[in-house]
Length: 322
Image (cartoon, rainbow, N blue to C red; front, side, top):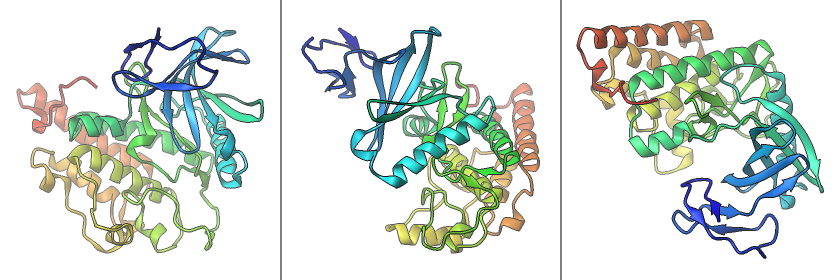
């Protein structure tokens, strides 16, 4: 009997199932597998699987701790772009030390398959919270914004931009602490624009200057973080359109609807902070992460004061468990 890594349902798996093979969970259809040993790691369950790789929940038999292992699928190891992103994720993550950036423990190869061993953060993502709750409580969104902005400020001190902030790249550990992951698209803050590379990132949150092929700075990451928080707070992406082309053009030309015009209960201070973070022109955004964090902390303080005076913290359910 093996527990499902998603819903914890016990599944019977025949002993003759080959190593690494999976069967769908009887309840949720998530892949379930028999434990496999890879070097000093016992891979116990699948956390997530995508086109390029699989993330496993594993146990380090030497250090007696749970870890996550990201393994590139064998068929993807010949793709130079995939491997370049994987190596970049390993090196950039290992260079950064911040509570809200996922820790990279080691990088290695097993039977021709590169793998990355990292801190375990398997208690959902901001994306899954949006999917479950519709719009995430305002106080929690502010907390996430403050912590991820601090993480990005640490990366910036190393001259690095994340370049793909989105709800799915903010995971939670067992204590509910948000962790920024996936530096596979990370680049140097002073890196020249590659005219042939196209626009990197996720269309729902991409900064206008990236679409216009203008200089990309930390303010582009700030815009993308703002768009991510906007989605979490309102339950809606900042702009919607029938095609990707129209969607990205909306970032450039369509005025942003302030969050409190989408959800009336959102406080004015929070709404104003997000509008500034998502200004069309980089020069109109907060000019440092310190300013961004200060504005969010100010909005957070107003919510807590309102709550202490018997209010409902703008009716956004701030009291819900983080």
